[in-house]
Length: 76
Image (cartoon, rainbow, N blue to C red; front, top):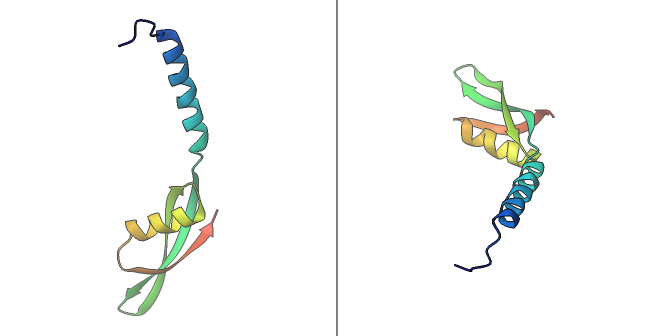
């Protein structure tokens, strides 16, 4: 450990890093439409996910749903 370690400078840098990270995580809520096979044919369902981009929203919706296909952004 260095003898000239500055705790105040270290805390300031840590604080600034946390602010920078919090500004980058601007997630929006997306509503994703997808199709599910039922006994009558295909029905459309909707799921709301929080994501940073439309691509991420589609990926999250696919992960959270079973048996879904043809995912599209319904509302931004």
